[in-house]
Length: 312
Image (cartoon, rainbow, N blue to C red; front, side):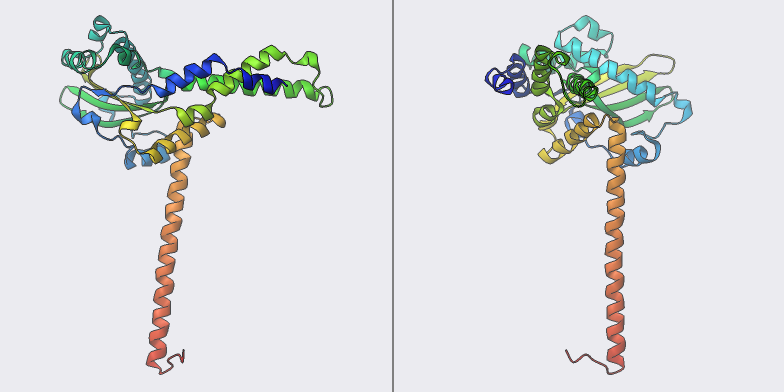
């Protein structure tokens, strides 16, 4: 009866979710090169396997500590995207270069509709992966191009999923104290219905199926002794640059990370480790096939030389 009543009355957040998933994050770029397809490089995969980091550390004289840089870049992405969505020029002026601000004015505020601009905001808690695409060092300046992957509402979905798991564990704990029988006073039906509706509307299965990864690319520049300034910004919906299988692979990794409460970098690292092991095994089988073929050919040649040709 309880399940039947839930089926009859869909929660309002399901309607909001439908509208959210139907709406697409607008893509824009102040740098034409940033519009290109973004793929995590093989060197990054090697670094992730060996160092548990998507990038090898730069030389010490660069004064660039990757962990703190990634943390700061998350805040920068959230702050810049929020100010863009609010059309807050004065705040953007202190975060991006004048040339970048002028390009944003032309390619975002003049080209996009106000409704599209409002959807640009990226929550730092929804960013699940970052890597540095390129690093350059001149005599007195450093230039870093960073790429970040985010899944809108990921943090909210995590919180809802973990809330449901804690609620279920609490019910199991109460039932275990009464020989597996859950008494009526042990469960608040209204609270359970609310938790269940939230979970059904935005659990990680729904997000991985219907959500879309957003790829952000920011170029940071800093003069020695100065602060970081963003000189280029690009935000792209992965549906515009990735194939369907690649989108599913990355969302599948996020799904595993949330379901097993594992750090995403750990999931990605083991994914690449398994790929490397599988590749090595395939190479071994190929070499074994060549070796066995060579032995067979050698034995056939020996038999022909001895006049022992097979009658077959």
